[in-house]
Image (cartoon, rainbow, N blue to C red; front, side):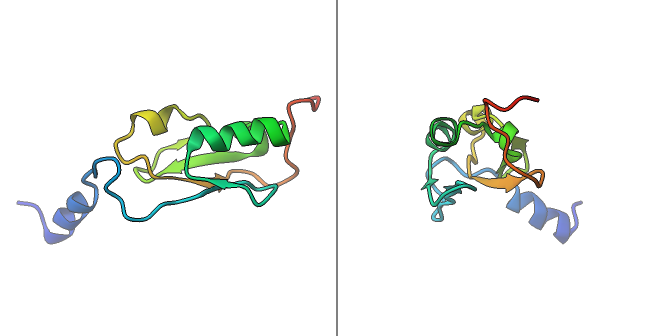
Length: 100
C-alpha cells in the first residue's frame, strides 16, 4: 500500500488536459519587453528580432512535467504544455552571425 506522501505525489503528477489550467505563464524575452503565450511566436521573435535561437542565447524551455528543451517539439506532444523560460548559462547572448 502506498503511503500518504506517495499518494499526494502521484495525485499532483496527474496530467491535466490542455486548456484546463487557470494560470498562464508568459514566455519572456531576455533582451526586450516582448512576451508571448505561444512557444512558436516566442522562438520566431528570438530569431527575427535578435538573430538568435534559445540554444545560442543560453535559454531553455522548462515544462511543468520537468522536461527541459531548446526546441518547440515537446510543447506539441506534452499534455501539460505549461512551459517557462529558464537561463541555462550566463554571459553574452550569442547571435546567428557570430563566429564560434
